[in-house]
Length: 67
Image 1 (cartoon, rainbow, N blue to C red):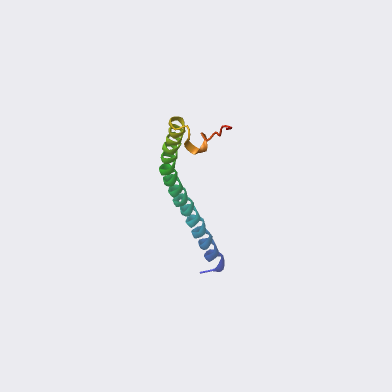
Image 2 (tube, one colour):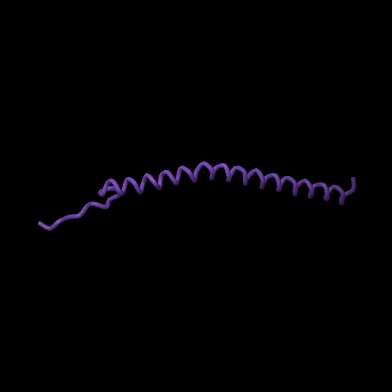
């Protein structure tokens, strides 16, 4: 096998491996985001409800009056 043919085959293999690596990585990231987005949305709604129902929630209700 000549050197140029071997180099061409190696480059072709690297291109295909890079393509599949990008596809697998993007699939994993999409899967993680599909899990995280609903959890964050529910947490945000719960946080807003907590603050609305509890005025002392998150340190917002501590007002000192002068004696």
